[in-house]
Image 1 (cartoon, rainbow, N blue to C red):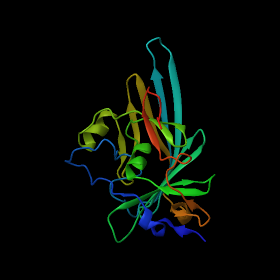
Image 2: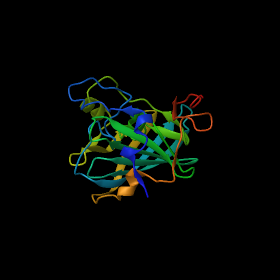
Image 3: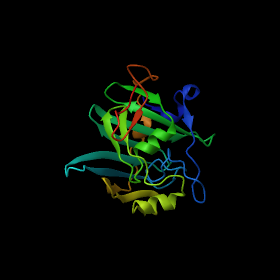
Length: 232
C-alpha cells in the first residue's frame, strides 16, 4: 500500500513556501517561476511533458562543449507536481505536495534505486526545473553546476523577456526560452499531454525509507559554473 506524500513524516519535514506571484515584487533569484514548481499551486490543469535543455559553452580558442539535460514533468488536478531529471548516477526525482490545512508546500526527493526519500527545501525544486534560461547541469545525483539568471532582482516578466521566454497561458509554465552568449541555453517543453497522471506518481511507496542528509546521502549541492562543482 502506498502512502500519500502529504501524510508522511510531517513532523520531520523541512517545509518551504514558494514565493507569492512576483508581479510587481522583487525577484528572489533562488526561486525561478518558469518551471513546473510554480509559486502557487495550479489546480485543474493536469499535464505530463518532456523538457529538454541544450547548453553550448563556447571558448575563446573556438572550441565548444555541448550538453543536453532531459527532464520529465507531471502535474495533477490537485496541483501536485513531480519532476525527474536524468543524472550520471540515476534519476533525481522531486515531488511537491500541499497540506490542505496550511499554505506551505512540502518537497521530497525520491531515490528509486535506493528505495529512500528525504525532505528538501523548496528552492531546490525551483532552481533545478526552472525553464528560465538557467542551465543546471547534473554532475552526480546530488551535485549540479548552476548558471545564474541573466538578470536578478527584477519582476518575473523582465527576467523572462531577457531570455525570450514563451509561456503557456493554460499551464502557467515557460515552454520555450533561449539564452544567448558564451554559454547559450535553449530550453523547450514538448510532448505535452493534458491527461490526469497516475496518482501513485505523487506518493511515497510504502517500502521507501526516510533518510536525512549525511556523508553517504548528502543534500543536493550546487557549484557555480566553471568552478569546482559542489564542494562538500
